[in-house]
Length: 156
Length: 265
Image: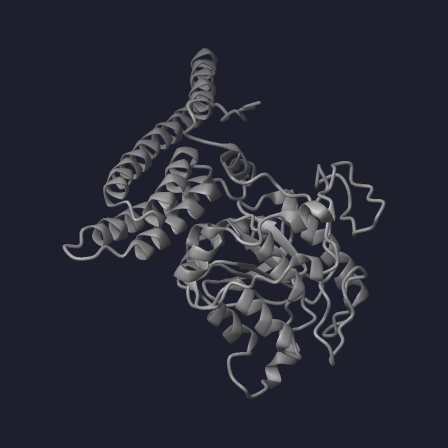
């Protein structure tokens, strides 16, 4: 039993480290984790869930704004990008945030093709992150179910 | 970890309340710090609420400047008799919000007789000097760069505690390092507290020529030679608000030193 828990914990640690190393997460995610405690054990999951809801909504708005047969309202697109940039920054979704920074510039330049491509990337990126974090939460659940404690991972 | 006396975790009912820009206020205890948080982003509201609760504050979170004014009873002319009992020790607001910006909210609060003494802190994801100056000149107590961290909130909390202890029930004396209110002149910008390198270890510092902050602060020269506004900021203002971007020269205001966090990369 202990060996199993230890193995799961190692797997978890490595997984988290890889998420940081590959640039999916940044120190704001670490900050969020530090705000979680026994009184609020699901804080990170709740915030991320809201973040991904935001992604769906904002990506939808941007897709609609870019799907105009007439003139595209780049200000509208930009406003949505700004919001997504804000929330991705607040949860530590580093890659999504980085894409939003590029996206903002493309909106300002009124670069239609660029915006469409960037939106596709944003869509892929947030979904990828969602899947990765789901795997992370699953690992946490497995550790707890095996009688272990989810380790604090020092990413420095 | 510090917890407030009441709720120690976000329950879904609270999340719901926050999500719809709920106005319900927690039961008020005169000894506890009550913070009004304003942000149009639900994610950010949840995070700031958590940060504030961890530092033992009661929090009311709303989703717009209008709702904030409504909560404070400032949205119409008639004075509410209930205002005497409404205890708000700090208002923390996002800058970029649709409809009413944090700056506009700040102005309205500073124009009100009931709440002008309440410290207002602005949060922004954009590290734009003209924006920061504009807010400080309008009387903002502090300016936080997003994403906001626990250390930032702890710093705010530490100067609030001093303030609340000095005050009695409804009259809040100004914090020692804040500007005295002068009703005939627009208040000069409040001293800007330097953010120490390790903000959780040292108490907040007020500006002095010999700063004990170990990090090299920006010199006034550096600040005034920065571009007055960036295209990105203008764009933001155009998109989200109709208020014109002010381009007042920073050298008109007293020199400010500030530890600038590096721009988000």
